[in-house]
Length: 324
Image (tube, rainbow, N blue to C red):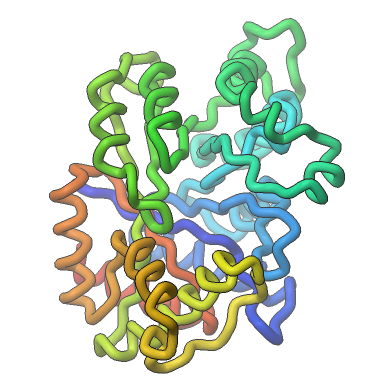
């Protein structure tokens, strides 16, 4: 049976505040728990005024205290931005606070220009090259096989995940024998090839006996297709702004937004939006089921920020009522 989860960027909307963003995060997580979602993940981004998940482990502690059963985790921690020891301490703390509920999804992309590299005091491109070794080192800190034992961290047992949108992450996840999550909600190009590589090369481990796949989709569900399409335009505007080098806070929805764009921007949105379910509950359920059939994914994680936080909760409830 397919499991469903939530990926949250903790968006800060235009005219809104960080306080509102964190309140919306807990409301979304609690609603996801209520409708039977398995996980609530936060993605790490930095120096982006419209995304409040930069201190990912702190946000997860906030959400963990507001929920009781849903798994909480990173989707993901960009390990080149950190030392493995720091992440062992942070997620060791989370594992002690919320035992049996913590996921540690790891990504390689530094995603940073020279200004952020200076702010983090890191050569992020060099750190990205060390990513496989750093993942192994992080695991060693927790299982007690490293030369130094973090407290908290030693003995912690978060569920490790490898995140990716290319063949690299798929190959590393297979080699380490851990679950693999593909970022198909914004980078669908290598989805099928990466999943095939992961499954073909998977080496069973103590934590994962067989390949386990999660794939990401955008979800915007409403009573009408037109309403759902309008809800999705806040994310569309964010994608366009990011691709044109002008990221901003999440903007209000705009009716018929696609039609107002030049052809190249429309094509870009159509391309990156391939893994999407936008429409009525029946249409969304059909799109999700077809995507599951295509990918044979064990889990689907839904992205899809909305300008009105309640609209995302309503969207999730409508979709889950149809999928369950």
